[in-house]
Length: 166
Image (tube, rainbow, N blue to C red):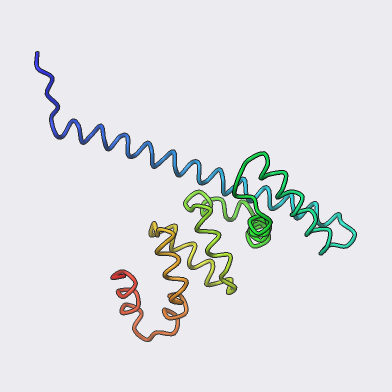
């Protein structure tokens, strides 16, 4: 009996593996985004119990950064913890955002934390989730003020076509 793999058989097996890996990646991303939200919530709750909030909050984040870095390695710098705190403050209503959290990575949210306009931030996140924008595409659209240009444009299709082209 000959062992011969047909192209369609092999392609089906590859597709099953690609799909499983994508699902696993999405599940991990979703879990980490939710974990960062919970950490942000906990940081905010701890800060609200402090006497001198600004100084106390800074000390909490610095101490927490050291402890988490020792235990979990890179990714928990003072700056990162400030972003996690800001993330919670911007998206404090978890049930409202849960679906979006499941579709995007932490890197997507990090990029959008820098967008000061609430409507623009929501637009970028929603479009990134619905259109499967990579972080690179999201970065480019934020840096070229895609949302603002779209609002200001008389010919929205032209602006959209330009974005699709790039």
